[in-house]
Length: 128
Image 1: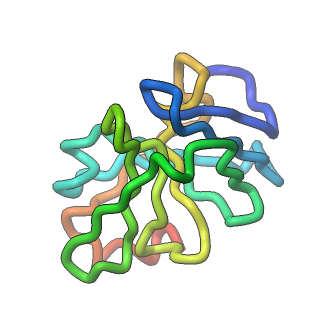
Image 2: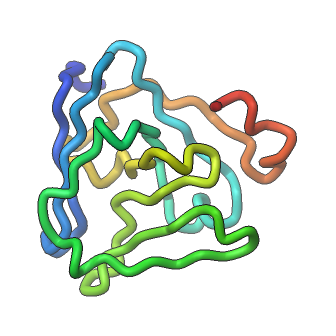
């Protein structure tokens, strides 16, 4: 595991979309590995942050959105390369969920906990 810092940068594969995360408490940051149908297929490792901790550095015009089911989550991806570097999660609609795999660091810098998203309704209180 990498050394914890308070600022992380990342983006999509082609570089059109770039973001920055400024964590208030890096020691408290935890990643989630969800087994729901979307996260499992995308390989998304979650880092949920507040809106204040997230900054879209460039590429707002390159981001497109996909919604399904309740349409509460706004799954965002780069229209050029198709990467999903972040989205607005149903569980935290006032924040962002950053894909740890899209951070510039080569290995996840946070502990990763499993999350049973297949049974989302039964487990969501674990992460609220």
